[in-house]
Length: 172
Image 1 (cartoon, rainbow, N blue to C red):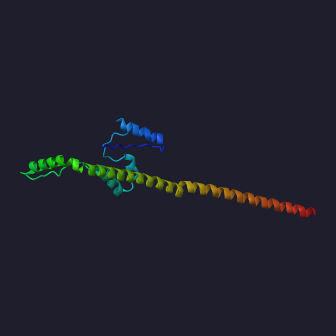
Image 2: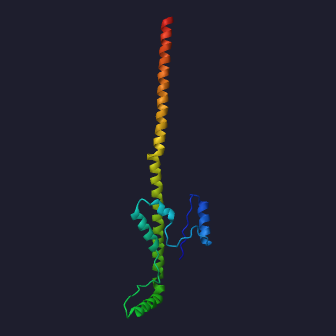
Image 3: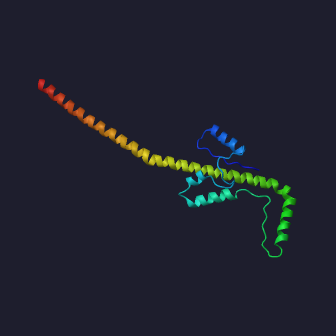
């Protein structure tokens, strides 16, 4: 089973399909190891070292290797134990392969889902910061200026009305 990670800066389906085509053709967008975390993803969690460390661990350890054994370090029996484990693993791979494939598919889906959730979290944090920060403050300042201009115009109109009423009384 091969999983290709792709990344695009836009939300365009055409860009996503082009990235998938490049990955399938062997021209992956970034030259990073298969288990490495997308640097853009790590950038989004730079303020949370715990989450960043766990994302790295997730991306490095999600795949289950069906040929991996527990390497023995016993001085005399290590070679025999390791050889026996490899023999048993090769003899039973057909039995465990469907479970390994299912576990790998699930782990890959979980890792991709978590990466997507982290990106959405970052996007929402940025939107919240924009709303609570610069855009709202700038908009509020602009509205306050407009209100002050309207108050000044209203004051000038009231003065003009008072003048006209005074002129009307003087004539009448």
